[in-house]
Amino acid sequence: MKKLKVLFLSLLALTTIVSCSKDDDNDSSTSGSIEGTWQLTKEGETVKTLEAVENEGNCGTTTVVFKSDKTYTVTDYYFAETCRQYSGNGTWEKTGNTLKLTEDGETSSIEIAELTASTLITKETDEEGVWYNLYVRK
Image (cartoon, rainbow, N blue to C red; front, side):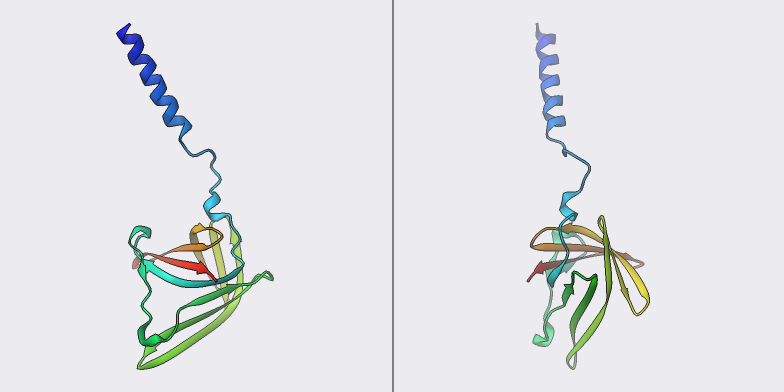
């Protein structure tokens, strides 16, 4: 009887673990629409350690606009003795969790770690390591 009880509890535990697993392989956290205006608010080396973006000199923060015609514009601010602004534009393509941006003939691929109605988290990897950026929809 004791062996039957242990077997039943083991089967129950296994069923619970299996039933609580992810329902499908489709990563719905990256399947949202990217079209719209996004403002950079946090960044860091891991999603769990994201810190607020410094707004040195009160210059402004990075804003990216993804348009429905597959073009984008980016406005970035930085402080170098005075506030300076960088503006760029190009085309974008989103396939699964990959975002390809093409500007001036150069294409870069960025991984989308999360995309919801209100947040976009990108993951960029280069020779210096991994960097995450958190954008909020405006």
